Image (cartoon, rainbow, N blue to C red; front, side, top):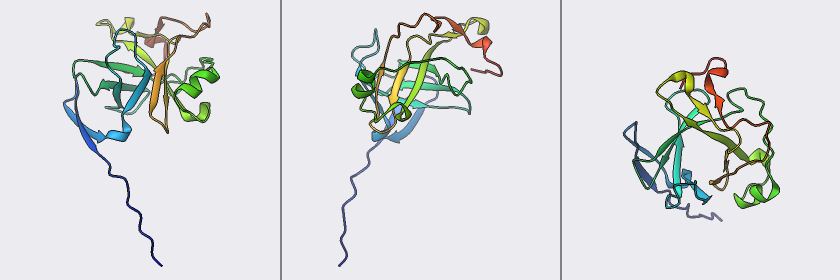
Amino acid sequence: MLTMTKEPAVTTVTINTLKHGAIETNDDQLLTFSTPLLGFERLKRFHIYQTRPGPTYWMQSAEEQRVAFCLLAPFQAGLEARIVISPADVVDIGATGVEDIDVYSLVVLDRDPAQRRTNLRAPILACRTTKRAKQVVLNDPQLPIRFFLRDIKVMEV
């Protein structure tokens, strides 16, 4: 006997980005922040995408075209930052463990390339399976608040 199951419909959304025009993605690929980013409390859904290979990404609000952030994936950039993720944060984004989490940090895109930096003490945690995310503030003084991208070998933003 042949049993057929109905696949859930995948909804495609068009996101108008700040820097790269309109892009299409599946709705189930959008991140939903369980705790909003500071200063952007009304925005909860974002799309992370790349425009070229490497450790930098763009995080575009799905709700507000004027809101986009440059991100650094610190581990992809070769940084050996010791980022300790609390069990409560793992549960909050619905991850099965730390191996289910992508880590990003916001990049400050200064006009002077030598001043471009990221805050490794306030990473964004994104669960690969649930697509829930949150930004956390870590109390580790060894993680720099102002880590300059010029200190990463072969880095281009």
